[in-house]
Image (cartoon, rainbow over the protein chains, first blue to last red):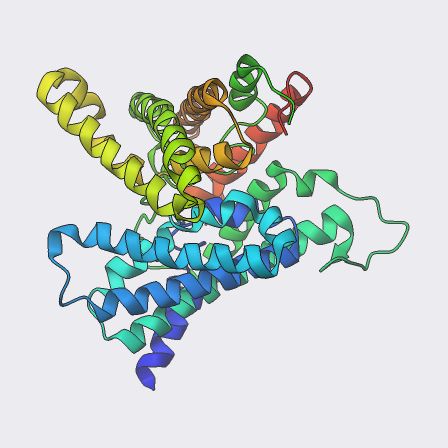
Length: 205
Length: 196
């Protein structure tokens, strides 16, 4: 139980993929103009990270070391394909809205990073949980950014108008620059709120 | 769908639909590598080259193998394998025959496989139904646009290297905010050409 708690805390705050490790921000910026899109993207990512960590961990003793990257990529792609087909079948409009960014989950470095760093050395169940919390940490950041972008850009939350008639939309917030500013500010704030003593430099592709 | 002139796509993908500044692709290496102008220029060249080749390669594979056999849903796996294999191949070739080039580009090539811009361009190509010339123009244009953005960023970061920044804003934070300002500037181009 303690193990679970530790993994959980690391995934959400200490090693949060977006603001701590600067990983996987491509998609985190692209889909955050609407809360709903971010939520779907986040859940999709949780699904993919969780299950691919699980699978990688399950076959970690059988996989030859030198081709493990390829194996991991294939496992991740397989789950992304499942996700893509699922969205296309049950929610075509959402699948259209997310466009290529569902496919780009494959190159989202968070998943690969977790497979390499955690699932490769740990038992399947705990790896599954680790993947899930990493995905959750990612989703929280996405939702946080999307909250402000949608609120200021459209005056609505989850498509429901909340700011009333008098609100003038900040069109900038729903355009790309808004995303960069928001993420920059989020990183700035979180680095001050949760200072990290062992500065790791993070950013690796 | 209306046929868009490949030249229009070429310029649009450099300025108005820039991979980094409007589609957020290739951000990881953009933030990690944009420290030196020289290295970012080399990386940009490598990305442009790989983009132009893999886009065309994926175009043929998608339209002549996957579509006729009804395997479109496999495109994610196939594209990523093509990209990885191609990068590996290029690395071996330039290591063997162009040694000087290898020393300037070599270390960046493996990095490119996981650059989302490469996969992203191939996916955009299939979603927007480009034909061969359009895909080629889109691939090269996106690569040049990406290079332009990363080199400009490296130049700016060089200037602010010694500046005193608020705590917590150093590194990625300020890079993102500068990128935002750059994206704002690039919005000014949006009247010239437009795709999608």
